Image (tube, rainbow, N blue to C red; front, side, top):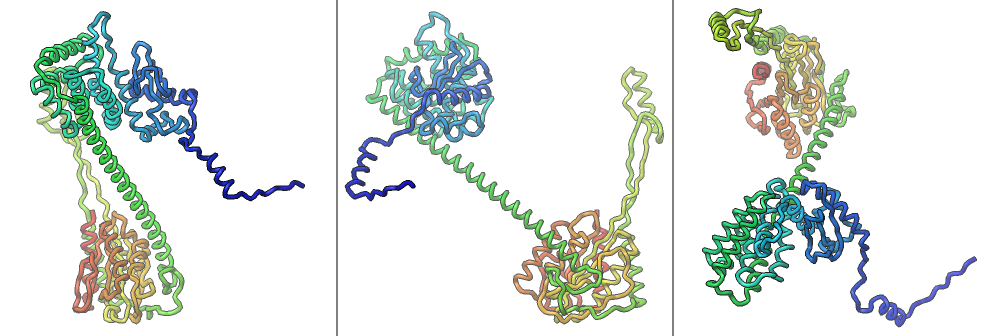
Length: 596
């Protein structure tokens, strides 16, 4: 059995340990071996194919490259050298350039890489042996903005990265210039204003450098230099002669103007300050653009999430409506709760009776009116052809003979054929929701009569037509069910209930009759005084809006002047309850007439 010895530390011991843990030196950084950067360089080489269109280049990535520059392209070696320190503070195992989109984690480094890719794709001219080094240097200076402009033509989305590369590449050249005096100011103009003219930087961002260069170089010389780099931007990738000619023009313009131009004191500091202002403005613009993109992406994500939630809510509502319809339209017409469970009491149905002669006559008249409203004329489709069958058009026949006689290909079609097709008559869907709370007793007899008349007329009009009637208070009761058979007897009911549940009644009628589905004459009739609570009204109005948006007509019948109007419905006030059957019949006829 092993023993574990516990040693209690003292404050002095803790202090000694702390001194060992922190001896005042910077915290140790994990070391990255050159081999770890080989994978990064290989993956950069894979992406370079898409950026430059070349497959013959090698990318080497190492801390502290031999060129001393952040990155360099060696055309004779077919190599792009990249300084691994541009990825700081990321370590090699955190960098995966092969994954598209990973570059967004290191935009500055990727911008420099895109710049070198532009050189690899477009800096394909070489200076001949014996060329003036100063002219070659001037041509290479013009090449900086030329290759970026050419790269933007084929890959405009890389503009953001080229803007970040300008901050990485230009500032060291300005802070540690290889040129002095007027030539230094001219080089700053070529690097900054040249990028402005190819669309990398904006005019407002480069105003500080433009004003300083105009002050130092003079307007005439700056205009001349601008025309030179503008012409260089149009030069072909292989045209070494033209590029060297532009380099010669650049050197000649500086030689001619330099003796007359005084060099301001502290020119390097002035240029560094102006370029820093430009880069700060560019960084602020990029940050604002990125923030706007993030805001747009967040808004789109929020909108997509809201739409998904809305679809899910509608799906839940449809499932719930299906369950409600199944429970309400039961074979025994029992009263149920909105959740589908049977209600122990409160059935408003008082019995059934035989329809009167007036009701039978009204059903027959409504059936004839519905058939007339549903009738659609036959459609005619006329086609022409060069051969029978069809009716011969003599003018087209003579034109065809004339074309044939002239030696041209006949295009006239002298035979006309008319095809007539019968248009299907649309079926009818009518749902009636009647309020059976205590204040609606006067509507019981006329609505019972109207429900039978409409159901009978719809069944006689079209076998696909269906109607249904639901009485609602806090519970739901089916007075007529959505079947294809005409009801034989009139279901009578009374209004003694309390509260209201119109929303679930609409759900049951919508699902049972497919009121939200186009292709039929659809009508929902709500017989109510609409004395509801705020929640009851809001739920009902939401359902009504969904139906009207789907193209279903919604009619509200009221019997008293104290009735309220449900928003979204067509309100029809009936001082005489006995006129309800005629009003519902007219609304049903109008609904099927408007169906297309």
